[in-house]
Image 1 (cartoon, rainbow, N blue to C red):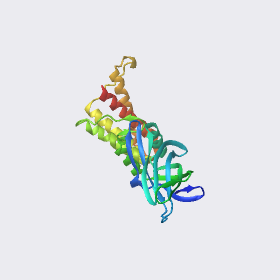
Image 2 (image 1 turned 90 degrees about the horizontal axis):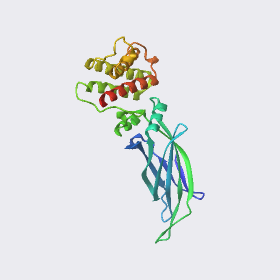
Image 3 (image 1 turned 90 degrees about the vertical axis):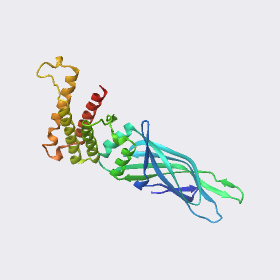
Image 4 (image 1 turned 45 degrees about the horizontal axis):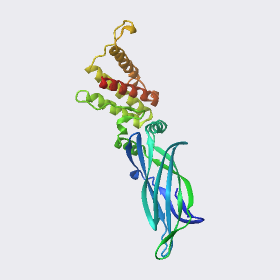
Length: 279
């Protein structure tokens, strides 16, 4: 829904955020990403008449009823016809994780609250005079397809992370690369969502653990008391336990799989690989 720009009670133009997924862009930041929303402002053409202006536009982004980020464009836009610009809204890593949890494998939907100042540039043939600005505000719904959102995460590097702030270790050389490939397939299955995707996520984690087992047999310490286990043996007990937990992913119906289970297994396996890589 377009926001009317006004000078007192006179409409002098409109501004709208584009819902065209092709125009949605993002760049990575130190603590998340900056979502770059494409804005279009239109001023009517009045020959010899005044021109509309817009300045100090601010965008507050909501996912559901939760505020997730604020962006501002301090620029001064005026003239006649159409103008376009971008407003960057920063989303932190915890916010991205919350969005992914709420998105639950579906499309991405935001509510944008816009507020700014607008008015007229009146011309006397030599100079222009600004009328007193009018504060304008309104809401707009933005909805983008799941695949476009996933592409943005990958393009900014967040696709190489599981969005619970658990980074995957760098991919190693063969034959260990097959394990990392399975983990990335598991991450893609989690992105797809739904019971089939969650089941596939756990199944790929199981495949990674089995390839790992083929390269390094776990030493679980036998049947002795746990207090006598070495640190490596305790580590291998966890690894074997996660493998056993994934049994149902290949021996049960898809409707028994949940996102929470898939996140838990993927996080555990990625974490185990991270520990191994750091040793």
